[in-house]
Image 1 (spheres, helix red, strand yellow):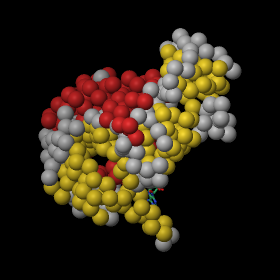
Image 2 (spheres, helix red, strand yellow; image 1 turned 30 degrees about the horizontal axis):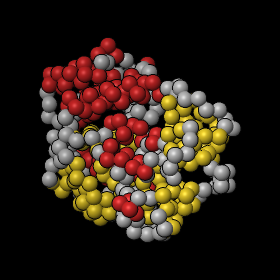
Image 3 (cartoon, rainbow, N blue to C red; image 1 turned 180 degrees about the horizontal axis):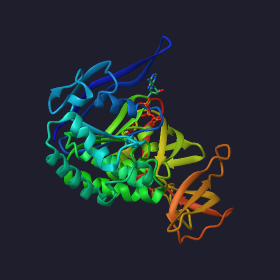
Length: 365
Ligand code: ATP
């Protein structure tokens, strides 16, 4: 087991003479035994970061340490890591047993008996003992993924690196494997870096999540911290489903005004607003639909669309002074009865409101 430290890690690619900054000065300290999820939209630099840790990509600048040891120049096989890919990367001509033992035979001094014992223990853990003599083509996607994980486990590495390992599985299997992977990681207590673009996966699996956008690390935090106290507008919009609603507003006297809102703000909150040009954010789950307007935090709205989700509904609402037909979303109990076209009142509680600096995106509250 080991800590994993990224110190001001930068990666430049050269694209026909033009420099692409894939990762820009990223620093993360990952604890021994921690499950860290690297998450962000397509092209944000997740895979490049993982590949630098694995030694599959050179590091332009910065220092990478595993267990306190600088490994920038170390070959992949000398880093004591095991990687699991989206594509599984199994050898098609080898049986499951051979796929799992091959790496150990190649790169360790273990005896045949020791290798057999490790393979048996890992197949037992992954519940694939009866598949040992099959070839990868004779396995389902889920079974192949188990073999790929088993192959990583037998190596007993200091660090697991996983690049979207569940993305080829159907939704139900993915949810099941998610829980299983978490349990596995807890049992093995191996430091893990897990890459995904799926914020639900990040929220449910990570001890902490590192959110990347455009090669720049936005925040490293526990899932709940990222949800409740996002560092900036990008994180606020990326984490949470449906996404946070945003309104462009200006501070005018004791209210913020804009995008159809005229919303009073208390003294304590106003003190934190260090600029006039703001974004007000409210999560769909924090909006309540009520009968009457009782305060300035209640706004008259029209129901545009009701999207039933079973135990909850997403209600798309528009304000009278609408923003070019734009709507915002309230996520309410599935039993609530509002119909499309109906007038209702959206309650936006002040304690749930976030504010961001419109220029920098930085969270002010
Ligand atoms: P995805 O989820 O789509 O895989 P990602 O977050 O993993 O995306 P990366 O694959 O790390 O993103 O890519 C980050 C940036 O670096 C992108 O702009 C990408 O086009 C660029 N990039 C990646 N590999 C290379 C390469 N070998 N040469 C040039 N540019 C590259």
